[in-house]
Length: 260
Image (cartoon, rainbow, N blue to C red; front, side, top):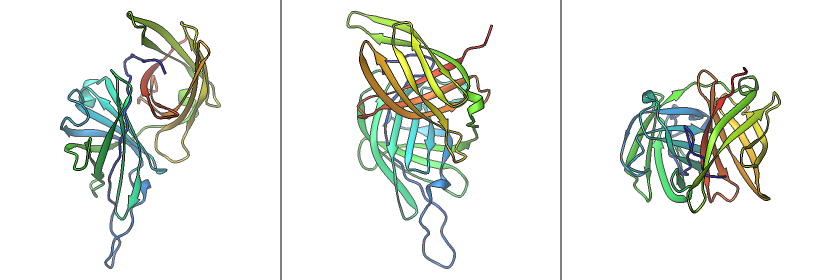
């Protein structure tokens, strides 16, 4: 996808650890990823393994083993702008889950390897450690965030700005995506690109939408998949998207168009 610079644009990839409760009578019980599924916001954050500009994160854990982490330039309460994205596939081992992946930052959109470790204590907090190698040192503590994901809340027109480097400067396009009641996405931008895809709520109560997107620009076709989250007022949607070959990724925040 073109370098999208809007209120929100990111890309990154990573992995995770977590632990579930033990069973009674001795011995451990393997953790179920459903324990950690949903959206999590950082209540504390320290370290620089996800870039010095990253000051907070919003994480999406899914029971199918996919993990997405949105990198933010400020605390959640300070209306942050995303600066990177994380996506990982994680696997369970005993009472923990872990994985590795790539981090995509706003300024480059190309991937760099990342490892993550973490746990899910009984206090309903998710602790994650991030790093470029084993024994990561950046630590985030997250708490669950409730979000709805129904087709009715995403129906409508959504718009954002997209800025693309041209080699001698940049060009900015206005992008409009229309999503109907069946979750079908269609649209275009002021530079002549077209978009087709699907935005569908997941079956489990994770507050997350699955997204598939095909972009066609000047005869070049690019395909993406990812997740989408709405704000509490359902007036904006944050899309985290990674290319099919996982070479690039992006995040855009689209604002709902109010009928006049």
